[in-house]
Image 1 (tube, helix red, strand yellow):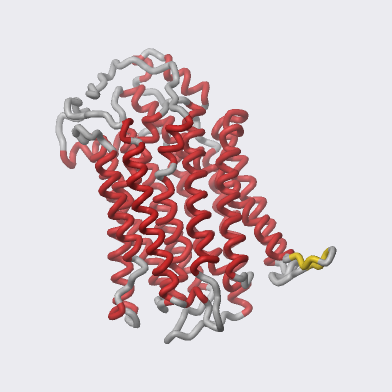
Image 2 (cartoon, helix red, strand yellow):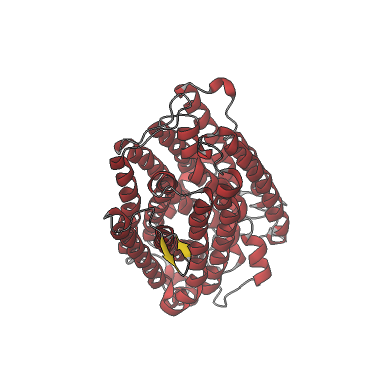
Length: 501
């Protein structure tokens, strides 16, 4: 199939084009690869490098955030390159294959620190930076074309919400089967040494995740290849190429008023999510003092809750539109975080509280903690897929106004907002741990935290979720696109759209 470039007078597509549920499912399972790699790193890298290897937490946070900052450069480039690629294999799939396999390989190496580097803070820091840079490069090559492919599979307003919700559900399913179950499979305590202090446990987990990631990448590429478009004869949008075309491309997108608040919204969501995700692992270990099975229950509860949030986001968006649904999700996250503060940070409930009822010893602290934490992630499960669907809408509006598809570039700038948020939150998590005087492993000895540090750890984690969710729903209130607005743009004469805001 040959893609002919669209002129600026191209006809709109007033009739939505959707794809079937089976096609959505085959596409969405590609997110399992991303989930295993990134959630594994977000969930365990801080623990691994601090508790098992003894790297200063501030250094760990900086090392991980540097690689995310690299994505601030590489992702917009990847989006632009993907959009202008002229190939018989299309614009997306070749990059997805190469990048996905690189991502899988580095997801193993990040846990396999050479023995000769251990004991040196500088050497471990450099290795962590190098592996993260390679891993993030592979992730960029896979993720940006993958998201753009999702934009292209359907232009139905509600169909986009459905596709992104299904993708989020697959992400959470992989997160549950992988990082959540890892507590039970790889981190069971035996003896006096905590399992999170043993480096070999992380390597075993990383090996399994890397193999599974490679398989998911191969399945994603082959099962969605039917959507590729031969672009060898496509006419380029810009007369000049190279750096000038890239910067002009980015300028157009950044000056576009429609996605502005989506960028801010997803930035704030991700800062809160990654900060809470990074710190909550320490909460499991030090604040709540969960067993391995209890950690799996707590972690698994967040995955199930976020998947349910994504599922609910579909009918909720149909009822109150995407912006209204996103604001409801934010309110749920805020209330749940406040509940955790009131229950645990005030001392109302002791983390070791048990109730005995009908001869059964109920771990009430675990039940209350899981309920509050699940509520926070349920709200995020509503907000995140809706934000991606919003970005697909504004990418279509750009095509309607100009006649050229920029799905790769729009998805890359959306991802850029996420990566900047992740970089900031990783630095914040490292400095939060340092600020509360969190002790790291020294010479193989398990650190002991003071009661003051443990309380600050819990309070900081719970408060972070509430603060960033609050700011997020304030900003998304300014997002202007609704179903009616998009339909009006689709049916307006092309000349009327020039200068449209």
